[in-house]
Length: 587
Image (cartoon, rainbow, N blue to C red; front, side, top):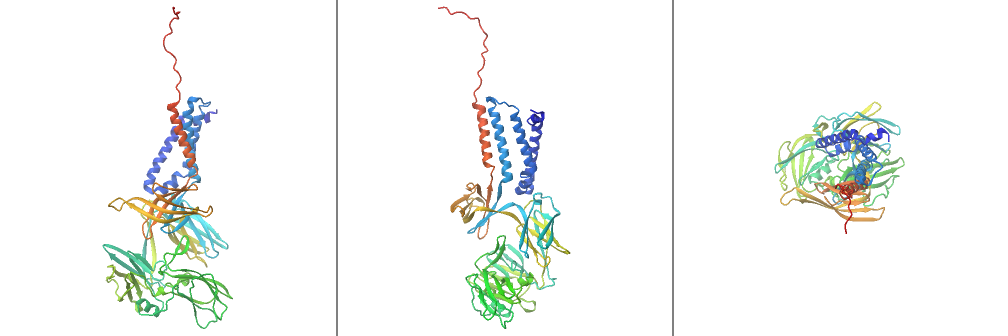
């Protein structure tokens, strides 16, 4: 055997190698306490250099076993132990390289098959053309990197864009600064609410579909800007209106003397011709409580808290898609949507005059004045008009004290982002996009997105975990948090789930608890955490490790080798008695 091969199994290499691995593991323990489990997994345990160390250790063990070749029966325990350890190392490397590890986050009553991985991506989408690109980013595995200077060239047909990630914070905190120095109309109020020693301060923006209202305790906090006097009277409780469950779309197309109102139907994708014109309307969807998520457009609830409707207007000029909000009629104009058909289109809904129960609604009046409308659990209203800035009021039925601390008709919002610690907890990146001489920038939190105004069409950039589709859909039927008696400390979690595999025509109902995972088609679903709220949300850790059978086989072989040390037959001992003189037995 060549000297180099023989030396691989010697102590001259094995001892430094084992010391190096021990130092790396100790470093990993310290790294985990500072930066978190996810960071140490990605940066150390699944890195190529750590896998190379394990592979070199496996090779060293193989050479140590081969050094005693040809083997004899007494070598069996030694050889089995080495083979078992090698299999354990190989199985770990297979799992690290080809395994799937992520989280399945499911609200109660909902279903999902999209696994969120522990690696992150930047998803960049251009509205015209409708193309999306995903860019994996790995700098978050090194928590000390603050200025990664990562530049990514992007091409969307005729558009050439350079996207640069120039700052990364593992534990970001965003400070919002709102001033009244904006050039455009952008009404905003700073509303403070207090109850039982708890206080919340929120900035509400009347023209922002995502920030015109928030929930706090049992109350809905809203800032609503009426578009007409009739709508203002309706909100204040002074007007009558015709009830339309889903609202109606008003259209005045070219050549029409007056607008025509079309009620939003129950069924979609059925063209509605506008009588006397060459135009027709096709409704696509209705959202009573519009929300945008990673899965696309949807509704948070069945209550008309933020009604929106999508439809297509078709005519001789072509087809124009629309997404209109009853509470935010300027949404399309604010985002620069261009249409082929020069039509006046509006959407009205009863929600523009109705308020949900337990509401504190702030409404702007003429001459910079404000009013407030309070509703109780039964919908009965109390009006405060005018509302004095910085004066405290009380919601009679809830007992909540509230006051408007500031009001800006021309609000301007700026954000300052800082980093609290090195722990990977609230990741954020700062991106800059350049197209020719134009540039736009934004801070994006993990699972958030930003719209960069660039060129004729804006660029949508999302920072989110990478995703992978599972072979089955998991629906959360019921979630239970089990507390220690007399405390609110959780002793365990239980989730009743329904697993559906359409390809196999199979449906299973199982209970997943902390020590009782669900295993299906190589995937293991563990109950790891939950998100409180209404509804409650379970967090399932999902793992698919193709190296697990190899690891189990290695453990069994190591056990067999250890047992062999104690059960192997011992060689017979030679007699040590002195040889005496042979004598004949006398009969």
